[in-house]
Image (cartoon, rainbow, N blue to C red; front, side):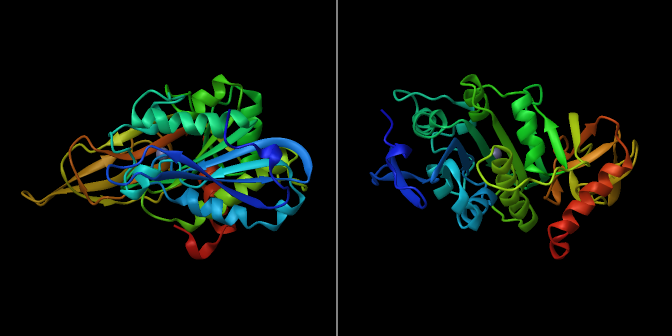
Length: 335
Ligand SMILES: [Zn+2]
């Protein structure tokens, strides 16, 4: 029997419901704080999770702003938000749990399994399985930056409709990964979007604004909030993506901006070898949109440098759409 019982909560305000997790040695208390708000009118239940990877922080601020939204006064249904899922990793500034496991590979988890597996199980029972839909907020991994993008399994029409409603220009069609929250929810017929934006251990204003607006848009789409989400006509869907890797070790000098269109064979970066003081060129092997890139200026041969997505009907227009989107969300923060 889950501890969270939304039907018993007074409607119209947020309730902080702490869930006990296995503690750290010498510190018996570890708590996953969930916040639940029930509307005065019936409707579906949506969960929003963040920091499932403990060092991915944008989602926490997205949720804080979302929780303060005046639009929630007209909420139909219930929202369950979890600003920090991976409490143990968060406290260490780490993506992983102290048992070095990736929480997003152990779902649905087990009450008798590893630490990671037990945390996954609590989230699954208390939050995911109580919901009809979900949004899981992520950033790129440490020292990498992702342009705001939604990742979803687009062969499911419900998921595709949610992904489009979220309202960012870039949608990556992505297969379900074994052991992920998205897969486990999907196995229970709970459609889940993953929003990926910004960088681990940093806050990025455009990513936060787009995320906050995205949740509200999806809730309008689901009939949980009044109003109509502006439907973008300029969204593009990526079918595939690839990583351009470093051909040499050295100092990485980036020559392109995230979100831009790169042509085949375009010069993307130089890697300067300190022994020779010669530069090795990095060129794109295929055309596409630059959706993610490393933030480190020191790279090893083989390091992933540029994440390039390939779109249906790809053209330079896509890059213009990403640029317009950044202007729309605040030119002062434009990249
Ligand atoms: Zn993540």
